[in-house]
Length: 193
Image 1 (tube, helix red, strand yellow):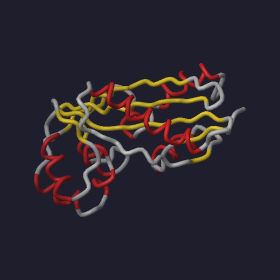
Image 2 (cartoon, rainbow, N blue to C red):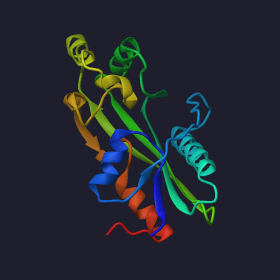
Image 3 (cartoon, one colour):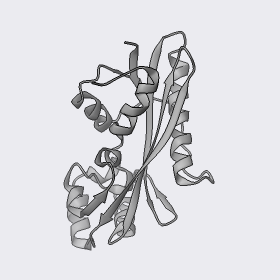
């Protein structure tokens, strides 16, 4: 089987691939994301994942491998919410998604460096958020969990306490829609079973 590269340093994406027993290496992307591009959210997610995948493909030129790259963000109304960098931004983000149904969108791209074949796709998951009180936000911000998660909450941690229900792929919210990726990998003759 070809060498598989995860074009992400996200510990959550790494864990998802490890949990299904995939043998892979990690090569971080240098791609600078621009969340302000005037595109539909699904198209933006695919575009950003393609940029990450191409960035890693350049680093690995002349190597025969399959690169998997992904980009995840939360959409609330017409607002795209990435990872807050400060606790103040995290507070504003949590207030913005409180008592709303939001969407987690992950764009992913798979590139075969030898054939240059690539597939980009976007997966959407609806998340129904509870009404989050200011006291709950204060307590949540005492941890740093909000700072490196799209939308300011980690569904695999204490942020799960803000989520009433989800409609769609749970792993998509974490950052890697593994079911959809597994289906796409079959087009590259990579079967995970």
